[in-house]
Amino acid sequence: MRVTVVGAGLAGCEAAWQIAEAGIPVSLIEMRPSKMTPAHVTAGFAELVCSNSFRSDELANAVGLLKKEMRMLGSLVMSCADATRVQAGGALAVDRDRFSALVTNSVMNHPHITVERREVTGIPDGPVIFATGPLTSDALSERLTALLGAGDMLSFFDSAAPIVTYDSVGIEEAYFASRYDKGQNDYINCPMNRDEYIAFHNELINAKTADVHGFEANLVFEGCVPIEVMAGRGIDTMRYGPLKPVGLPDPITGKEHYAVVQLRRDNIEGTLYNLVGFQTHLTFAEQKRVFSMIPALKDAEFVRYGVMHRNTYLDSPKLLDRYYRLKSDQRIRFAGQITGVEGYVESAASGLLAGIETARELRMLPAADFSDETAIGALALYVSGGSVADFQPMNVNFGIIKPLASRVKGKRNKNLAISERSLEHIRRYAK
Picture 1: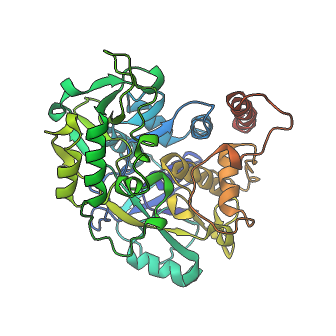
Picture 2 (picture 1 turned 30 degrees about the vertical axis):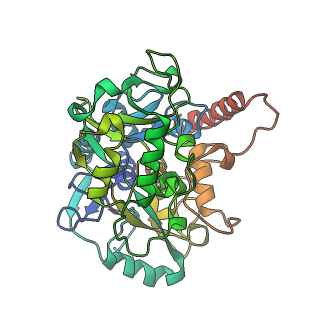
């Protein structure tokens, strides 16, 4: 039986890959480039529309554990990310263009995957996985709303950071370093003294924002708060967030600056850098004016400005089970950000689990049943958990993974112990 996967983002590509690797034919349907979204700019699969970072790669961090589990389970997204990684200290960041191209080529050349470029406006026959993301087309959103109920489609706002060229950065007013010397000196650090910071803050909170229909600051996912919204929370909020100087001493003086803006490499060649934590919905002209107040960026060439868009997701605890199946029609699954998972890795992980479980079901095998002692299982159980009173998008974290039976001293040691227990579960499944 052929499975239909709608949407060729991170989750859709991962789901299609897992099913195809099990020898089951897949139709992967993607509406781009014939119909674009407000955030995408290419026709490539798995396009990264916000940051190019997959976040921490350490097992003491929950997302690092999730990535390790996915690697052990044969994740396409993780293999492509590892193959196209760029220097980013203790984080996994990728060359976004090469990453998308590698995912696209891998999927297009798989013998069991057929790719169709068209918009889906209805519910396909047979087994189907909707991985259409938070920017699902209006026509399909209307059809899903009719199927699920108007009150079960929720929304929040997301935003992306701008990108500048390396050659336009004032390197004489910046320095290379990674926070706490993790990894190589992978980030360009742009320091600001107190007067520069205060002037920047004042202009930022008074800058003109773009008109985004229905925008409310309290509807923004906390991990993607626009820099101007963050600045509006208080004079020092940015200095305890993306402009935190701690762990970034000046290599000449050995002292920490008042504030530091970090730039992260956006491609392998190192010709492009993005402004870390500078998601924004300022107008393009205001982004150029205000961000150029950062001394090292006074002559910066912006090749992409930050944008904001509305994201739609399901009231998943009400609608989905732990296998991302629709409770009312189990031939239908959802995966990716439309389920309420937040983040690149989490989206791909939901697609991986949905793909594995779909393949096992069609092959008449018992469900994998990843437990709440694993990151991938705990994430699915959070999304489907009926005990969640006010469901909101969330990144993976150790708080949703089952605690250890015995006490381990020290947060890092405890997290590492949870990770080792989780990986033992994955090893047993992988066998």
